[in-house]
Length: 201
Image (cartoon, rainbow, N blue to C red; front, side):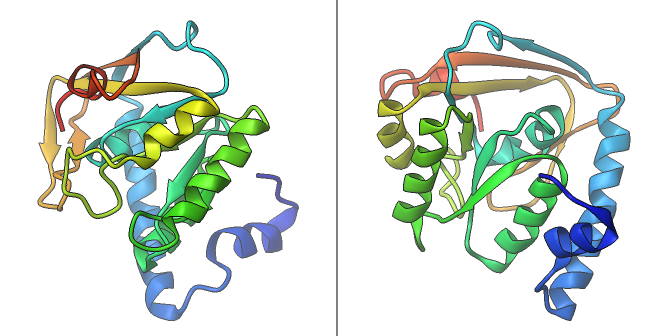
């Protein structure tokens, strides 16, 4: 995302947010910098990244989105983001970290969002999707991800973290603890190997 001066950054990250959402965004932004600090201590190994086909469709459980947000930032990957108010904040944080975003979900504008991901794939841009998002149930794959396999190589991100906190959210989001070891395996995904390719929630 290109910016030119303070005004562009303000418009791209916070423009159009009401006061309540602006306060929430500020809290999320502070949390983002905490994650940056925490993430600098993680020991990360990614297997299969260089061997993947392009463009790629990366599928991963919603519970892993925070740590993957840190690990894969500034790679230009396009992420499908909910049209909800929480999605507004996520959209701005993802843009801040160098991701592209399209808006949509399984419950509101989902088809349009999937088609926008298809457009990015046709331009050679990698995309990411949480097949159990945006509201679950956790670990249950929706069909939209398999529609995209006609336009890009479909991969699951199987993530293993040796020590982490699990938040009391609908998805059981995990945050790796300081100095955690993280292994990410990029595995070709099909309907037949979802548990192997995506791993545990």
